[in-house]
Amino acid sequence: MINMNLLKNEWESRQIPHSMGKGFVEEYHYGRGCSNTGKCFGLFYKGDRKTLHGVAMWQPPAYGAALSAHPSYPAGVCSLSRFCLRDDRPSNAGSFLISKSIKMLRKDSGEEYQMLLTYADLACNHEGIIYRASNWIYNGLTKPRWVYWMEEDGKMRMKSRKSGPKTYTHQEMIDMGCEVSDKKYPMHKFLYPTSRKKRGGNQCLGYTKEGKIVIN
Image 1 (cartoon, rainbow, N blue to C red):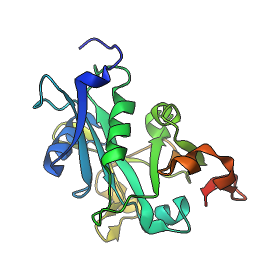
Image 2 (image 1 turned 90 degrees about the vertical axis):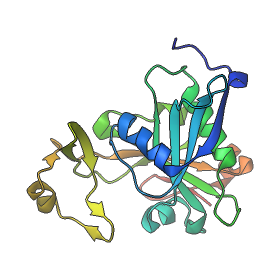
Image 3 (image 1 turned 180 degrees about the horizontal axis):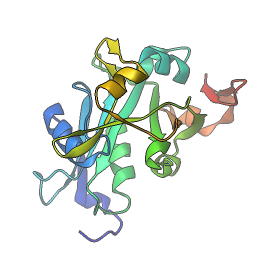
C-alpha cells in the first residue's frame, strides 16, 4: 500500500474482539504482547472489512498512574495501553484510528472517561510524535526504569516486572533469563482531557513542583 494520506471516507474504525486485537499486537507491536483485558478498536479499509490494519487497545491504568493523571477523579481515567499499525499504512492512519476510538470509548456503565493517558517509550526511541500532532498534552517524563526483554517463539518481547498480583525484583527478572537495557529509560507521558473545553484553555492546567501538568 502506498504511503499517502488516508481518505477518511474510505476507512473506518470499529470495536473488535480482544482476541483479535491481541493477535495483531503480538505480531506488530514492539512489546509483542498485551494484557488479557481491555477494549480494542481496529482500523479497516471499507473495501475489505476483514483485513485488520491497526489496533488501539484501551484499559484503566494502575491506580497510581490514574491518580497522577486526574487527581480529582482517578476512576475516570483510561489508558491507551497498546497502539500499532502495519508498517505501510497511509501516513495519517494512526491519528485517524486514535480519534475514532476515542469517540467510541466508554466505561462499562456507558459513562464517558474524563481523562485519557498514554506513554511513548524512550527505550524504543519513541518520542510520541503522533500524540503531539493529535492535540494530546505533554506531561513530562516518568521515572526512569530498567527495561527487560526475553526471546519467545523466536521474537524478542518486552517483559513487565509485574505479572498479576506479583511484582518481580530486578534480580528475579535477570534470573528468569531476561536481557536488561543498557541503562534506565523514562517514558514521555501524554494526557488527553475528553472535554474540548479543558483541552483548549490553560485555565484548567495546574503545575506540580516537578513541572508536570495536572488537569483540574
